[in-house]
Image (tube, rainbow, N blue to C red; front, side, top):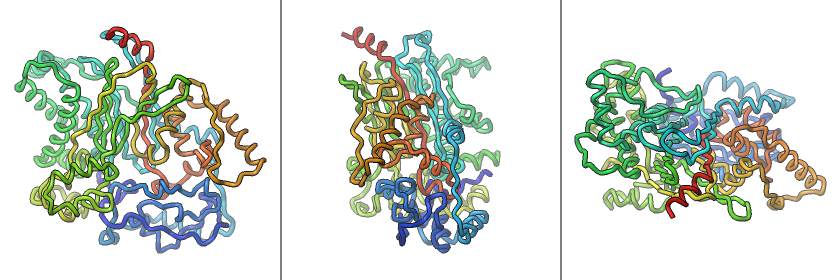
Length: 570
């Protein structure tokens, strides 16, 4: 149960070709849930990550809008590219083979549809909402509250989320974390990062008070008030280890006291970097407890991206490492909605990020640093926590693996050295921090892992959330995108849109409403219940082929409070 799969559907740990498309031979074939299986010899390749994501050419169907993926999906990714030499290490699950062969002999396709209540039950299983008191005892809050939700594609889900109020300083912290090579690193970061940020923000006097309380055995001042869904657990077994590492950090901050007020940007950067350093150090030192020893190694050898918001009055700071995103929803004077990016993806599509990586390594490595849009031809994000295979020297990796538990030493991934690995580290957890002064027209913030952004454009996200929060819908002409639509079909689309508007408040959570659109939208931009039902009915062996884990937090701002802050500054 402890072992993290080294060939999961979110990421493949072995490098190589990124995609194989299966040509469609006929357009008159069943729908997705009734789909004919691909040739039997291809399924070991799918399970062994020789196919990273099925593109639109890989779907055997005749209703494209119900199951075929767009070209945007076809360019989606696993965290790592696969490599053929590891294919023999992994075998399809027995029950999955049984499922495939059973479908081979089905003469009459059966259709499985979830009812609307069943769909709602799945979508709302992980939703969480929190309303912020207008006055929290220290200041009037610029945050009205937040909604968050998660929809898994991996089993178990590799995404995590966190939200907390800072009790010894001002402001709120909210974040989403996208794991790869398992969920261990994302879990650890979601538990620990906010403590490191909060400690980084504390004044010297408070740090001394906390340290004195620990020394004398007195109760500690609470640093954070967590806002958690029941499924958002903390690791009790590692709590003492994590606390000791955090204490060492605040002791160093006490020793380095400069007497100056801590800058939020500096605090965020220091917290990210220090936590990643502690994750690495804990794995190198190990632990006499065999369970903890294996846990810290799993955390270090897996990885996670992070996108964190710190909101204090009108000051909004976004610290991002990797390819999750932060987007601001702005209401224009005419009532329409626009999106403002508050983060940049750290991947091969970001030219500045590619240049940064190249500047940190010798010119002789220029051609091998980024291959197939991946770091060293393997890793999609160029910044991440953990992932010590891209940070440690080869000698250190071998020493830790050889002296580690059998589960680690027997794992082919941990023993695999990336190609062209000459001048580590190649990866950093240092965040890019963006500061934004909130304005009355800034109505909400969306933090989301890349599972959302792979399926929806930021402008559509801003419109859908904005209309949900205000209840005001600005109707745009229906775009059919070149499809031939009859008068009857157009009437049906208009009827669907009217029904959608009347039922918009079925969702009591903005993040749930956004997930419903992300998974269920058809090519006309409307939620198609049949499509939504099919996507949520996919067995776990196939779900990851069509989408990623989705984690969303929607933060709603108090425009009146923000306006009052602005007036005070004038």
